[in-house]
Image (cartoon, rainbow, N blue to C red; front, side, top):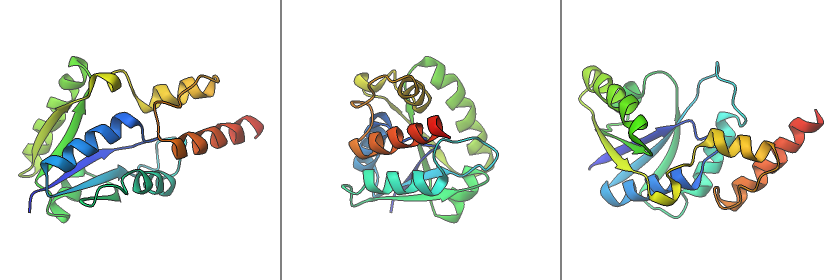
Length: 162
């Protein structure tokens, strides 16, 4: 079985993330969407909330499952018999960073990295931009799934009140 991982923080999951997951699902027998759980980072959504949103977002693909991980991605891959990491690339600047990560990962474990160029309609999209635009009242409805928009709006309202 050819199994791949699509790693990320997904805070929140965007349509750009889902584009990469969908395309990876067409290339591999199984895709694990691996949510990085790093307690030291300040996230808008908890790891459990991000995993739940991704599970809902990926429900339409039979060969995609969602899991959380801590520590090194390569350790997660070895523990789950994953031999490929799928990374979406939005711009040349992404490639510079991701190539370095790919080379480090392959030095740690027998894992290949597959780069998938982001579809043009999502090339500008990042979770951090979605959060920033939504924080200032901008319309991000076309950038995230509807249920994510509802949770994002509710979370930002909670922060505003508290």
